[in-house]
Length: 481
Length: 117
Image (tube, rainbow over the protein chains, first blue to last red):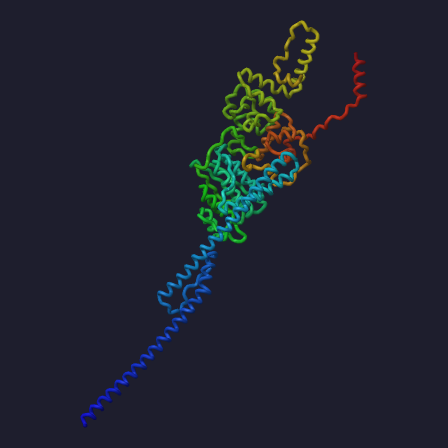
């Protein structure tokens, strides 16, 4: 009995002990669970904070940073107990949002460019038509306001064309091979304040030209550089432009201005654009959009010339447009250059020295001088001017280079008569007659000869007419009878 | 300067140097230009030089110069007035077209000539 009681006592003691142990364990578990729940709650709170940060700060900031490079993009919050995985996923969300914004921006920009391309192509063709009409009007009416109108039209055309180029359009014009100096003048004419631009021609070959496909793109690019130079310099200063040939058979166009220059940020941005990036977004050009360097950059990327900008010795900026040899050629001799094209600087004195002492510089009395060089030294004149005016004397050889094309009305008898040089004797005769056109004695003699001939014809019809008027030329007679 | 298939490269208004009207008295398109004996300075533009060379052999009207230079008359007037102002050219107003001849004057002249015999 006692044994049973002891056993029961032990059992109950054991139960009690177990129960106590269980109770203790349970309370410990509860505590743990409570702590875990608290930790989970804290983590959820932190995660929610992070997501709030993501939605309200990080993604908008990342989107802003796409257009404003200097804008800060916040990361994870400092006090967060977010472990690796969640943090990585949150950052990925920012990346995904960035990519989506970029793609959408690309699409929107492409749509905007395409719309502008269409519009500018239409405007460009209309402006080209009005240019044709203005050209016709200029030759019909003498009102100088038509010239001004033409200039305004050209300015509008340049803006439209630049916009079109920026929107990836083809420059929209096929040209023939065009003289480099003429292309430079063409670019000059498209810029407000063009009268301040002074072109100096330092080419060794006067007829150096651009190949057809590069002519118009270069004119557009140079016009933008010139527009920058004139817009950012004082209206009283000049903008010197130098055209020269480089050692490597290329050409170089320097545009200097005495303007305000550029700060480092702007310079770096401009150099990035001038490096010819594959894509330029309209949204990156600022407001109002600054298109100049962007347009040049687009053309550089497509046509293979290059441009560099640096500080100019004139105080402002210097833009250097380098044209590689494969874009250059030489135009034929039969194409006359425009009268407006400046002659090469080096050619001017040599030409004057070649032709005659007084031809271009001192045209005071060319008639008597013309007699000497024409007869004894025709070979000195001929290499300089292979044209028909080669034998006609000093003043003609200087001007013969740009002699008017045949067919226009002309009163100049010398160059026409000189077109048929046959023998030295003829040349001498030509040369001797020239002054006769001018001096009253000669004219008097010719009239006297005519009178005498008429008189002798009337008086003695039987006798053969003496012909003292043999030496005056045929067309002199033609004119007079 | 000729309106080719594409867009012309060098427009005539470059000659004006940004001015809206020529400086000096207006020139008629038939005004006659004559070269004077003055020497051209080294800074003379190529188009002005060319115009002076055109007038070397003798006088031409403005419209003829324009045709030779392949410029419109309005642009040539700018060039010519500049050169006139600088003393390199003389401009002469156009000769007015002949009016009706006074018949009595001619008759008197005829009588006079006959009486010489």
